[in-house]
Length: 533
Image 1 (tube, rainbow, N blue to C red):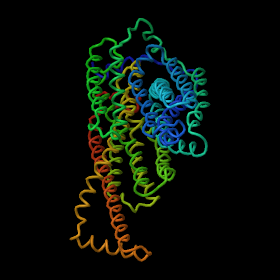
Image 2: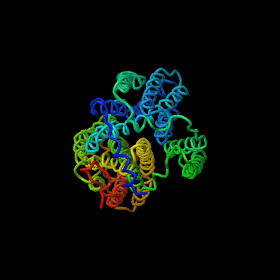
Image 3: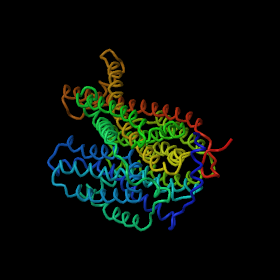
Image 4: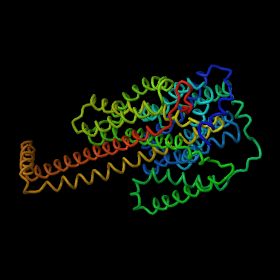
């Protein structure tokens, strides 16, 4: 059955909400923003959490891992859960769980209880992003969906930027517990407004509500596979990957469970994850691109601050300010791109985004060094986010092309899952590459620093003489000169490793640029459905 045929039933359903759709957009985007924010706001508070609960820093990192693992497990089955209990009811249930667990996280007297409450919070948060996106898709007429997705997109790409800065400010000025308390009024307001304003469309009310057999095997495979994948991504570099039996076991578990899950769900009549949707090239390509967009967004969010903090001595606050400029650009670009989706084919916008991102990353690879100024670092971040601004809305819209409306919940759940997993993998890859490539370049540079090297002898004698003039003995001055020269080698090796990573990321974006032209043509004037002819 063709995608165009699949899309026919959607034209038979004409439903519009009773309230202004932009009011609904504000409510669901508010809820999604808080959820995405809570994913990153705790990052900078980990030392405070460890100190406040009498735990080590390594143990406190499970505060992030427990949330991400639970969140990742729920995302792909959120569509199935919405069909099972109703989308509005499921959205409100997720908000309620998220609210209660946030309160309990702030009150947690010990680290084990905090980890338990964070896992519950991840379960609640896992339903907010996909359901918000699905609600927007059904609430707005086709010609306005791009603008609606732009509102949601602002929350998805801006919250990870705001989160670390907000978390740092709260923990510096108040207590780490307030990073969980501060969101409670907003989430409670979103819960009330959801109950008041949002309703399920008729075609969702007609979906099966009873008699659904729970797929215990599928849920078990999903929980084990995705949970293991998220933990190994979060802990892999810390435990030296395959040098750790724990990480090796997680890799085997994740691989076996996820492959088994795909095979199991493929042949089930009522799967919890409709993997057969990946037979559609457009849906599969949109998910791959959303994975890569998450990969690029979160990896660059790691690269710039880590470069500035570890090699240039920036504080966390200053590094966060560098990222803030990119957030402002996204605020401006998202609505513009949202409007363009009703006038320009999605694949052209997507191709433009990947091209801009590739150029921006190649530019960073050529320009980044240890002498960059604060202003120039902001410009480098701006060069990266211009491309991302062109990607989120069109890729999201492309994922729905040719899909019947009753599959919208499953589409949004899978797209958000791919973005989040892409972000986790991107973060793990770049942190590993930074460490490994820095070691490689340091070895190469040290190989050129020998007593026979005229350049080394000249630098060593000049530096040791300068230090000796400050009053140190000759032997102490020579020791300090060697230490400073090694520090320079360390910094240069680190800078070269960042250049390598930007080259690799730019090459990946170039591949996505080519793939964009293979997406199906859509008719923007007809609301984004597959173009005929």
